[in-house]
Amino acid sequence: MGLCNTATRVRRIAVSVTAVTVALALSGCSSLIGRSQAEDIAEVNVSSPELREGEPLPRDYSCKGTQGSPPLRWSSQPLSKAKSIAIVVDSHTSSTSTVHWVLYNIPATTTELGPNAAEEPPEGAGQAPLPGGKAGYDPPCDPGSYRFTVYTLNGKVERPEGAPPLDLPEILKQIADQTIARGRLTAVDLQ
Image 1 (cartoon, helix red, strand yellow):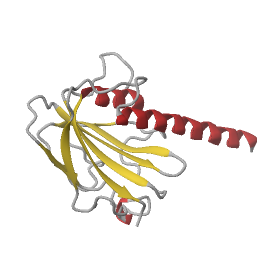
Image 2 (cartoon, rainbow, N blue to C red; image 1 turned 45 degrees about the vertical axis):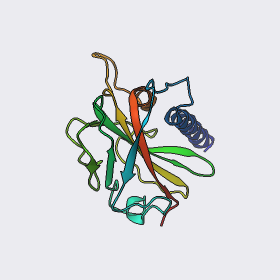
Image 3 (cartoon, rainbow, N blue to C red; image 1 turned 90 degrees about the vertical axis):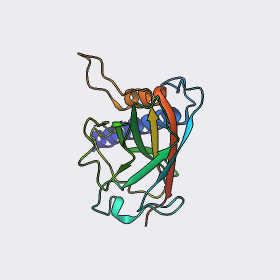
């Protein structure tokens, strides 16, 4: 029993450390894992037919539902340097921060994803492994703030030839380093 408790504590610590690192990377405040080199970050307008800014996350897109990832739409001024799009979904509760989904290398011409895009991502797109090891959308379960952030990148997330698969911090670092525009839609709590 003691070994199970120790393993659980180690997993919680690992998830917490990853979440803090992710939060710092996404805010652009961390020199540990990267910061966007873009001089000016353009604004991306993010919307959804299912989500409303500042409103609860619909039950269908939480761990109590069956819909998977919600549909998202985005737009921005024309960006000649845009090479790809990345989406990061994370949450902040009173006790933890968690990454629920990272979809990257979405073609730059894409302006929306339908419901459950994690099950059928756009051609050429990749999904980062989450702290639990699973790739794809991990529906939120706990009350908190859920941020659906869209990034326009001036490159793609790349894995050097012969290198091991990229982990979550490396993917987030590449996203942060290549961001030229970003926008966010935030849902609060769960329905």
